Image (tube, rainbow, N blue to C red):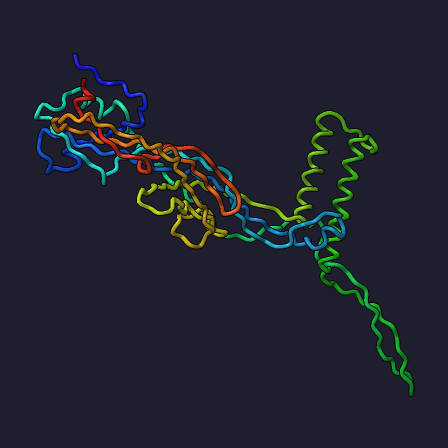
Length: 352
């Protein structure tokens, strides 16, 4: 009875069986066509977009409240998480055909090559990329002002009153409605904030004319806190957040001189963008293969009958690093088939 050799390094003998009719209708019937495996590195990247709107009283925050505040509106993207998943695909540049009809291969090899070492199943199915680019909007501080923009000012005017041969100056008081200065409105808002804090402290300590207990106390404190936060945004501003997720595929190339790739880019306005979009700063992937140990082959000097060979790949174990040029974002060890070694084995050895 023929037994299939159990291969201790499953990844080493990865053979991908491909239906002849589906890949190449010109292949003769009775042949088995297969490809060597290739590794694709898929990055799933999450980013968050912060749209910050500076408060109208931002430049007075330190003067009246003793806090620092951001002075300008800005949009900032930041990477929050990166997940890397290696997957195996058929390398169409390394296709081989074995004759089944001549009796060189039996069902045991077919089983080995189709499912024994690398099961493809749905490994080639892609994940949907999600793009979220919300439109730019202005900060809405309407209704957050705690005082009126207008105030009443008294102005003393003088008019000349002619009496006989002389003119006398007579003062006339006139009230006018004028717009408050930005700093005056900021000062009044700061006073309101400090007053809210004082009221909250009085409720907590019981230093009030009214009596609060249980849910009533909690509701009063929550309302005072809500009002304080709302008025504070006039000084410190506020942020809105949008979330973005994208997938990027990197296929290492064996004949490439440098194993450094632009995985994707991060734009200040568009967020995550593909590597060919030059509007963003590059995020680089560096693949460092582990050196192979050379093995010496010995011959016994006897003439041998040409054997039917099955080709396979031994993957290179690689250290994969992802950086933004300054910071290390990700590092992992991954087997990459196309950066490894190609070898062969007689089919009759596999089926003994």
